[in-house]
Image (tube, rainbow, N blue to C red; front, side):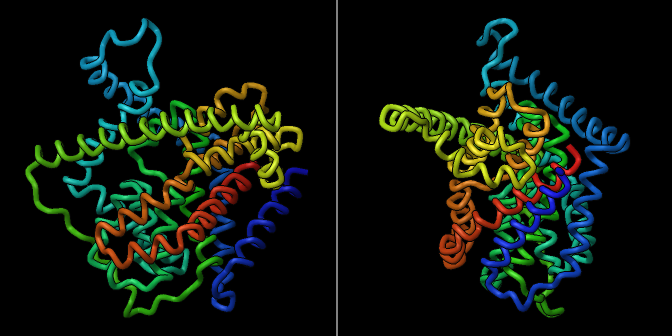
Length: 392
């Protein structure tokens, strides 16, 4: 039964995306088929094989070790602030971002990351049929983050037509940065985080290839990666540490605001309508949850979490998911994969602002297709969750 529902889910996703396509005649189906097959194979390998389990455990183990190192610095500064055996969310989940950001800076400075990102992108461009820039940007977004990635291609931003700019922004919204992957792994199972990271990479190309198809000519297919301004090692390290701290503070501020706002709106709706705002959204999203593979009896609860992620962010939704202890393991897995992306309303402003800071005209272009961007990124998350549901 779950295979039939998965097929239905994929058909619904493709149907909705096809209906919104801006150039149906340009859609190339061969790369789409190849990438869907790759998604299925990768999901099977990561969720249902010993090799996949080994890789996930290894990946999770690396982050567990890094979080342990981060805890050394946090305990030195904030030791004794929490009760014995307890740890505030900000200290245990968000502040480790500072150390992970510093590590990314070191790998950038030593030219290890740029080398890996560039050549993985070149390999991907052979599979997805898109340009080298689009493929590079997708991999770079998954490492550097949805704002920082545009700095590395800022020389080309002003020269890109609207359709290529859309693909770059869609990749940034569909993936998550490595600096916060460790935080996710403290909130949901690492295997779902890893699975989502891999599936979203290909899912972004699949949805963009339907929603926004185009061909890149050899003359246009040029990749110019902006070299970072030369700094001393300790200048760079200090900059990345501060950047990581800013991210932690921003996420904390957004959590305070969004959790409080949702609690207030829930209270108002419960008082007037006898049903909370999140429950109402749950009914709206329940059909989507069902075609993703969630059992119908749990579809409303799952839909509520999905809607929370869309209107607030993935951290708020992950916290809510953790509170729902009566959901089946299958539902938890499908929803967890859905949550691992930056597809929410606030990301429209973040991405448009990042591009605008580098090129004002292009920033305005991004702001105009913001809702279309969110639709595409959400379809990527739904597709990844549907594929993962086949093997849960």
